[in-house]
Image 1 (cartoon, rainbow, N blue to C red):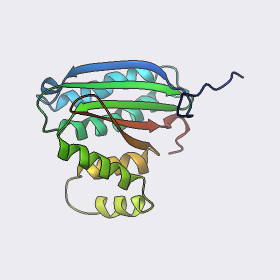
Image 2 (image 1 turned 45 degrees about the horizontal axis):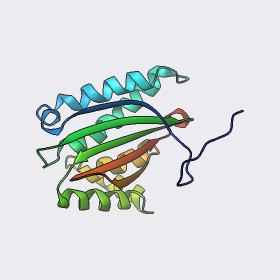
Image 3 (image 1 turned 90 degrees about the vertical axis):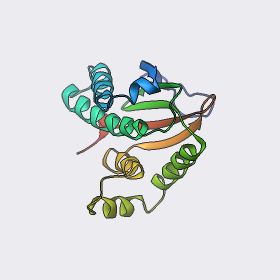
Image 4 (image 1 turned 135 degrees about the horizontal axis):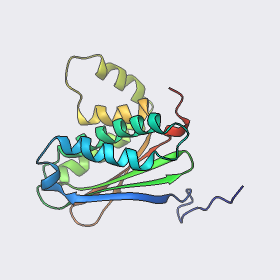
Length: 173
């Protein structure tokens, strides 16, 4: 068994697998881009998993939800970068997107709420309602349904990086 390498922050090092970049205005010009990108990425990263079809379906669904959150950006210029890395059973999605200050604040607050102790209760009460899911609910869904961990990191310029760790290979349901 090989040694686990760690990065500077002390977390395991994730090996880069694939990255897709596109102009944000091209991405938001067509809703179907969310599905196209998530399906493509899922097929590429699922080939060597124990159940590649299951992994691809779960990854595509989770990534599509994240892309739909990004699709609602109000920033018209810049680049959307989608990077997937892996460490063991966990796939990491790093989604870098341009955003305005209010969106940055939304993402930071939403991700902190996802990590809170009442995330499960808030998610259940939100899905029992008749309203369409909000962006915050989608982030809650990733944490609850896919056992994902989320964080927000700074990115260059008017951009933000959303980091989502998906332990899909170990997901029981």
